[in-house]
Length: 194
Image 1 (tube, helix red, strand yellow):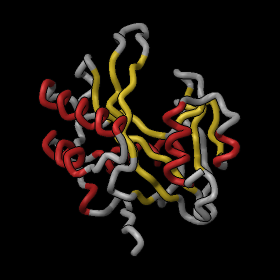
Image 2: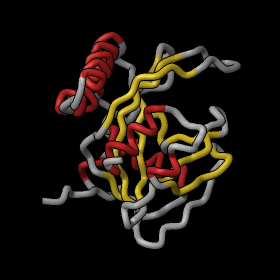
Image 3: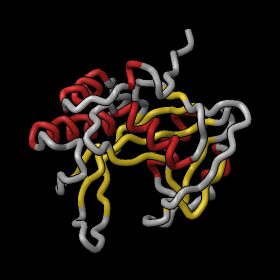
C-alpha cells in the first residue's frame, strides 16, 4: 500500500510549538542500523537537555527539517548548491519554533525550490547530526537533521532563491560526481536503492 503524502494544507502539518511533538516523531522512528540508532539517541538526549531545541536561538544546536525532493517520475532528486556551505545538499532548514518536523521539511523545500504543490511523506527516512562551522555572529553548533521524502508534481520547475548558488536535478549516478557529503549520498541510496 502506498504511503499517503501530505500537502502543506493537511491538518497533520499544522504548526506545533510543543517540543514533545518532535520527540514523539523521533521515538517512533525505527533506526535501520547502529549509526541511525546513535543519531536517534543523541537527538533525544539533546532534546532532554535543551527544551528550546526547535529554536535557532538554542546556540548549542537545534533541530532542522530536511527534504530529498523527488521528481514526479521518481528518477531524480533536487539538490541545492548551498551558498554558505558551498556544496550540493538536500533542501531544508531551521524549525523556527515549529516542532512539526515534516511541516518544516516541506516548508523549507517549497521556499528553497520555488515549486508549488510539493507533498511530504510524514515519516522520516533518515537522521543526521552534524556540526555547522562558526561564522561571524554565530558559534559552531549542531544541526539535528530529521530528513523526509518530498514529491514534486508533474512538470515542476525549480527557481533558486537567495540561499542557493543553483538548484539541480540529479540521478543516483550523477550524485556520486558532486561536491557533497556522505549523508546526501546515503539519502540517495535509501530512496533509489542504488
